[in-house]
Length: 215
Image (tube, rainbow, N blue to C red; front, side):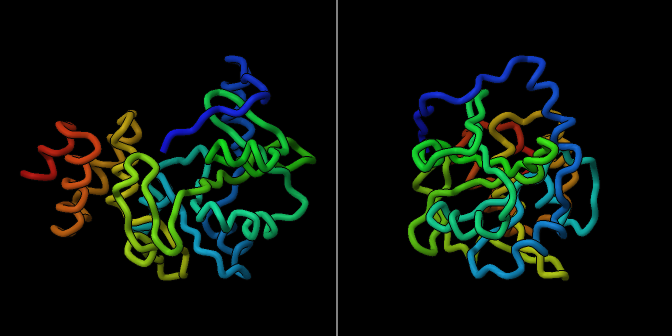
């Protein structure tokens, strides 16, 4: 889904972008996030690289941050679970500290910041949805009931199903995304492989991963 960058915000310099790794170094683990959200009834799930490790049942690489996704309309309830922390909107190389409702509405990433240290602890994606139906930001015609896109670990931690994680990673296919793909595909069932292939054809036709999925 398209976003129009809101006015204001701080444009990050090259040095500030480089320093973000250090500011994320103390980010929470999935277990810590799940503990903090244990009292909410809001739908949420771990996304991105951590979701693939939860699917595989083991940590396979270092993670520079941790992302969860929530229905956009439920974000205020999620925010209430992290009282004492600041919420910065992020996007297009800018940060809107203590983001206003208008700034939140115009972005989808929210970084949870410890005001005492300035460290970032959690990245919250505020996702489009229609009631209990998730809507893909990359292609609004891709929609699934939340119950069909969330799996859980044995400890009950919710995570995005791997085929959708890989769909998002396919856009840029950074070296770590390629590694994640190669490590995850052997664990996918035939149905999951077919669903990922079908989604790639729709969103990224001709993507190089299709050959591996269809072989």
